[in-house]
Image (cartoon, rainbow, N blue to C red):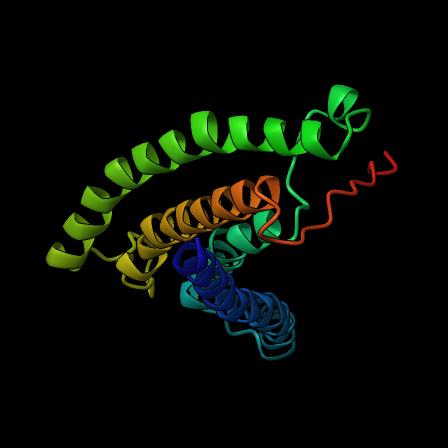
Length: 179
């Protein structure tokens, strides 16, 4: 179990680093967007690459930050029942969702996303827009993001099983969002 927990903590560490990159992608996207507006309206100049790089950074933000959302236990869930469960009940619901939904869906998404990325990388596919960018970096975000979520899901499974075995301390408190 110690080796599995070390693996889970290693996955946490990796996803922390990708989450920092995702945070910088948001800031960069905002800066590029503001700069693009100033240049377009102030100097009457623009390029499709300015717009596309914002999309690429947004893809990085979403796909590379998703695993961190799972790690921080801030992901979407059905609160109707979950909020009323005890610590053990929450952990069993989490395990069920991770094992029977998250892991199979992430494997399937990687299965479908990887060939798309590989085809774009090999062909060097470019955007159809004038001044557009090469597309494979944006497409790389799909299999990479899904793989990070899959790894984080496996790490969360390990942590919950270890918690059930009294080998790992985990906060099972869940605060329902104010919506």
